[in-house]
Image 1 (cartoon, rainbow, N blue to C red):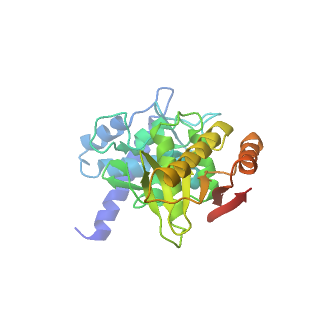
Image 2 (cartoon, one colour; image 1 turned 45 degrees about the horizontal axis):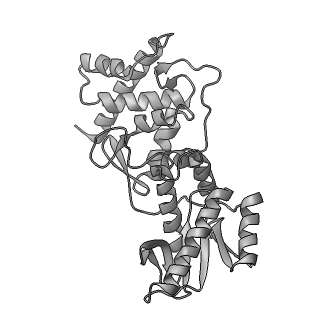
Image 3 (cartoon, one colour; image 1 turned 135 degrees about the horizontal axis):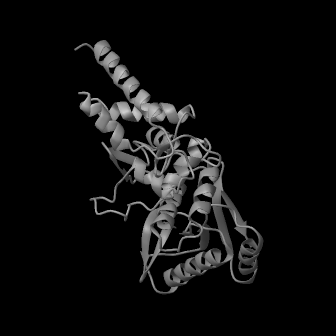
Length: 299
């Protein structure tokens, strides 16, 4: 069969799927499996999954259908509105990776599971689009249906993206996978801007610093939030690294400490850093600023 013929055949099956969905949208949500079964019963087994995917996305994007967590139905007031894809991508990355809600190797999840875990805040078609166009092959990798987090630093973790992710994980405990992933991504994006040597997860006695920069003798502690308690913990940890390095570890010398945050601290959090910098020793404040990182020396 020629490529043109195959394309025409797929277009026909998409049209069949679209008509079936439109004719069966009612009060009771229509399930994906029902549409698949309808196509298979008509002999479209090979094209069924792709055809239903295309039909559903087209109907969602044109607001002729809303794909809710309970199934496909007519749009209603209060349904999720179209959202910027970079915002949706940030929300997907803020989910716990690896996924712990199933026992698949590698902690993978499907697009539908990502949509479901986001609690209906975003349209299914926007989650699909963000994962395929912004995240696939970069922050996420996919093997047919299931997606996993990669070790690559995010191309989209600009100041705005980090701020969105920090807000998304703010209510989660410090040891949550989502906050740990945000800290790891923050560190990866930061060290990518350095022009001198650096060491990640650098051991100092029994402690381990997020980043040690031997050229400038600086130790950096990263956190996923900028509230006063988190900022205080970051400063205390960095100060402990400095003390341990200069008194207990002959291999490491630390002249300065820094805290790396996803957003600039404000109010009490900033006042605390300014106070300890004036009362104890200087501390450098580092946070995303546009496409790079801003450094503030507090004394």
